[in-house]
Length: 281
Ligand code: G4P
Image (cartoon, rainbow, N blue to C red; front, side, top):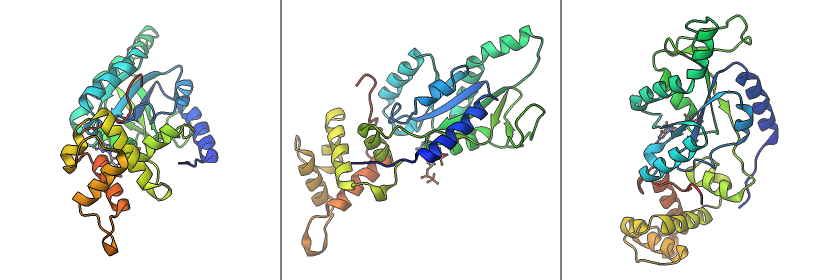
C-alpha cells in the first residue's frame, strides 16, 4: 500500500509550531495508546527541546491495559512525564493537573528564585490529526473556556485559555504530521482510522489486522467470530464472511463487507482492548 502526504501543509504547520513553542513552558503531546510510536512525529523532540514534556497516551480505553503500562514505562524511561487518558471523560483530568505541576517544578523554582510569583505555566497541545486534541482541550478546559486574550509580549492574536491559577493553555492545538514514509507506520495509522478509508485497500488492511491479532492476541478472533483455529488470514476472513452473513448478489461471499466489519469492530473497541504496536518490537 502507498500513502500520500502533503509536505506543503507540513512545512507551514511546522513553522507555526516553531513560533508557538517559543511562548510556552510545557508541550502536551497526545499519542494514540494503540500505536504510541507510530502516532508520533519525532520532529517534536527537536522542536520542544528546551521545554518540559508531557505525553498523554490518549484513547487508553481502547488499548491493552498491560501494554499501556509497558508504554508508559517506555516513555518515562526516555524522560517524559506520562498520563494514560480517555480524553472524553473528566476522570483523568486531575491526574493531568498533578503531573503538569510536577513536570514544571523547575520552572516554578526558577520563577521563585527570580522573585516572580504566580506566573502560570503556559502549555500547548500537539499531536497528529484525530488523536483527540480538541476532545482533550474541551474536557480539560471545561467551563474554564474564558479566553484571556492578548497580553503584552505575546504574539498578537494568540488566545490563551486560563484553566486554573497555575495553567494557561494555547487554545489552538499544534498539528503534527505522521511519518508516513515507513509502510508499517502507514498501516497502523490506517488501521486506527487516521487515514481516509477511500484511499485504502480495505481487504489488505483487514488481513494485516487479522495477522497482528493472531500473533499477539491468540484466541481472540476464534472466540469473537466462532471460527476454527490456526488458519491463514485469508481463510479466517472467509470464515468471518460466512459466519457474519456477508453475502453479495449471486450468493458470493462479500470480502469487502467482512473486512469493513472486522476493522470497524477493532476501531470501536468491540473486538477488545487492543494495542497494535509493542515497545521494543
Ligand atoms: P483531533 O482534534 O486531534 O483531530 O481529534 P478529536 O478531538 O476531533 O478526536 C477524534 C475522535 O477521537 C473523535 O471521535 C473523538 O470523540 C475520539 N476520541 C478522542 N479522545 C478519545 C479517547 O480517549 N477515547 C476514545 N475512545 N475516543 C476518543 P469521532 O468519531 O470523530 O467523533 P464523535 O463520534 O466522538 O463525535
